[in-house]
Length: 452
Image 1 (spheres, rainbow, N blue to C red):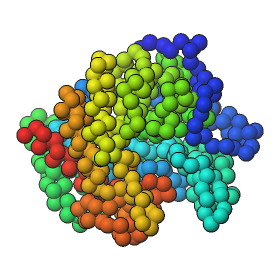
Image 2 (cartoon, rainbow, N blue to C red):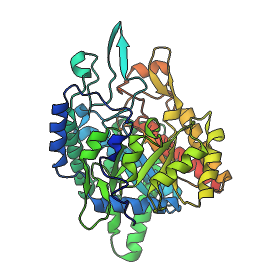
Image 3 (cartoon, helix red, strand yellow):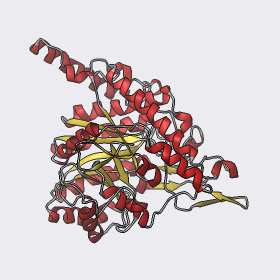
Image 4 (cartoon, rainbow, N blue to C red):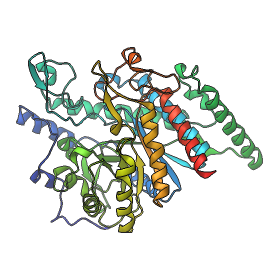
């Protein structure tokens, strides 16, 4: 691995660039105090874990693994609870089980958790009934309540975000190491409200088939399949709040580059992917694998520049392109970008985020996403990659293990009126557990039709 020369990049060089989507803290001294505290706290992840993920993402780029990335649009401090975290892991495990069985390949499980506390906003302010306040930018910055106290950016929230991330990650690791993710006992992952889903029968047929296969293999080999006892989870979040990210970016002994040790897999969102911007400048010097969101306004010229900046040495597993066009735009937007990557000679991991390009607002003012549009974009992504001689190696969902009603459609046929029943998100609508499981089953059916 080559080193980025110190004269060209350092952990603070982003500060000389335009930094979009950053909060305006009223007390600079309080901000600096918090950043000093963060900079000496133990890291949340290790460089060994980061390097292991990069190797797995490289395998996914070559079709040997499949990336499942999913979780909340924005985590909440109030939901840093054992029951919420457990249900989130359960749905990711259920989805990965379906994908392992249907795709016949190993799954990389990456959660949008343990750090997804900041969100970009289209407008820095929000006005209600003639009162204008800061927009809610995620719990790491301010609170969702529409009051001056809650909406004023508070640097102390960064310490709470770090603490909540550490607690979440500690619990995830404990569950993973303690047998919670043991394929011998997938019944541990049942979610009560999904048991009555129209999809429950299909899912439990898959569970039964896998358990039979494990029993057969263990009988033949006369030994337990020990590696099935643990499923590894990696963390990811958008590298949006740059002062926080910098405070947790560290040099590592015997490594030539620095790591963002707040997460295994940081990504850049479409609002912060300007070639000359601060976020790209920050990310290009990291040793972590990077995700790059690619939207309908992306051009071949922009993409080539980003590839040269973020992956100059063509490191295997370094860069994952996460496309988010919308079902109405993907057939026009994706092909020229695939052609640009193929022309560059790179083998990159392409994944599809079918959520963000399909957001709409109901007559009552609620954001929602329609299941048929989400699935439509995802199926078209598989088709376009196949037609262009490329490979779709993963998916990226905003989802929850809770019984929410935020996206319409799916097996239960939720409509706009149903959204009022259990709409809990303060930012973007998420698939509930039943819809997420249905999405995994749909991926399998699509891939099986393509391979038929």
